Each structure stands twice: as C-alpha cells, then as structure tokens.
Length: 324
Image 1 (tube, rainbow, N blue to C red):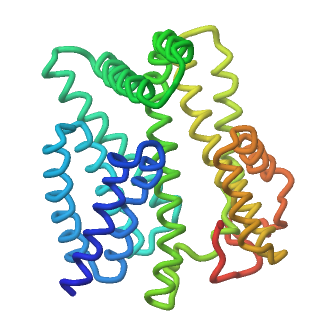
Image 2: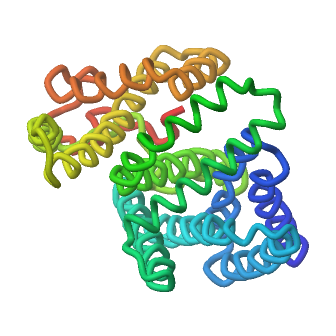
Image 3: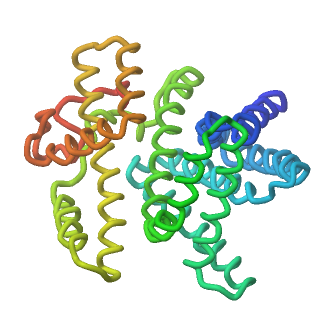
C-alpha cells in the first residue's frame, strides 16, 4: 500500500508542478491534479486520500516556497479540495450535477474568503483586491511573453487592453470560477471513470449513462430571463445577468456534448475521430458556442428522443457509456 500511495503522490505532484515548469501546456496538465485523489478515494477510502493530500501539500509547498511563488498555494488548495470533494461525493453515489454544484460552491467560497482576508489586510474591498490580483497576473504573463519572441506592438496592445479587460474580468469572476471549476470536475470525472474501470472492472453508478444526461426543461427560463437583464443599460442586474448567461452557457455546453457523445456512441464512431472532434470543440470558440446552442435547442428538439419521464436517464440504458 505504501508503494501505491507514493505512486499517487508522485503523479499528483507531477500534475501540479507542470503549471510551473511547462508554460501554457503545464496549466492544462495541472487541472488533472484532482484525478489521483478521486481514484484513490473511491478505491481505497478517505484515509488514504487524506494521506495523499497531506503528503502532496507538503512536497508542493516546499517547492513553491523554494521557487518564491507562494501565490500558487491557493491554486494548489483549490485543486486538492476539488479532488477530495469529488472523491467523497462519488463514493456516496451523488450524481454528476450535484458533485459539480457542491464543488463550484466550495471553489467560490474559498476564493471569496481568500479575497476578503487579503482585502482586510490591505483595508480595501473584495473587488479592488480582485482587480489588483488579476492585474498582477496579467503583468506577469506579459513579462513571460517578452521572453518568447512576442512583438513590441502585440505587447503594447495587450498592455493597453488591461484597463478595459480587468474590470470586466472582476465583474464576471463568479461565473468564470464556476465554469472553470465545472469543466475541471467534468474532465477529471470522465478520465477517472476509465481508470476506475481498468482498476476495479466496474464503473461508479454516478458515472454511468452520461450520454443520456439533460437539464430539466424549466431551466430554459433562466438564460431567457438573464438575456433580458443583460440588455439593460447599466446596474447590478446587468452584471448578474452576464454571470448567469455565462454559467448557463456552460450548462448547455455539457448537454450539447452529451448529445454529440450519444451519436458518436450509437454510430460506433472511431475513437480517433471522437478525439479530434472534442479537441476542436474545446479549442475553437465558434464550435464551443455551437455546442452550447445545440444543448439549448435540445429542450425543444429532443435530439436523442429521450422519454419525457426519463429524468435525463433516457429510455435506453447503457452502463458503460461516457461523454467522450
């Protein structure tokens, strides 16, 4: 068991440190830091998962302090917390929407408390604290780009854009955190499903039938109402509406992915084609929007012909399917 535990620690640490030593792609790798925790929690239980978290925290904290980048500690805590929450809820057979909702609430609370604490120390508000943090990260990124051959004209444009971008990023921060957390959880659970099947020869019940998932139809009124709020000239309702639209866009994006995965599965599409399709969906903004619209239109079109009373489980049961 000791060997298995330290193998998990090594993988978890490697995922996270990718964000430090592998620019750009390392950030993408680091979002899988919760993955070993989810797998170990489900397979070995809470005690082993906590040991994995404690040892990983000690190792990574030592590294980031030695490199003098303590700001990464909050990012580490968020990812480890998400792994623990997912492992706990998955082991108790919570469904995917509930897992994502709880994880998003936890991420929002952690960020809010952190911003409040930093703001209190400097005697400034949460929004001002957030804007300062965003500006600092952007300026750090600009410095990194200087070392990678980016032209002076591009750097000037980026620097001039900060004054416009930062206030909006601060206003949309709740939605950005929610959407980012949801995507991280979804990706980790999808991959955890495959590894758990390989290790245990079984799939956790909450991870079955994902290609049949859909939102309750009544939720469609939320983005419609938010759309009207977003066209208001100004005010807090406008900002709240933008946040709601962004979150609901992500919700219907997941539904759109489920529809695409359903047709991939029913038509036995080769995995290589599926991989390319998902790659372009995630990295081509226009395709991301199209998939969200597809999920939204499913409320009326019912593309998978799911039964009315299926509750998102459909009229055909598939125990080994996945969105991907």
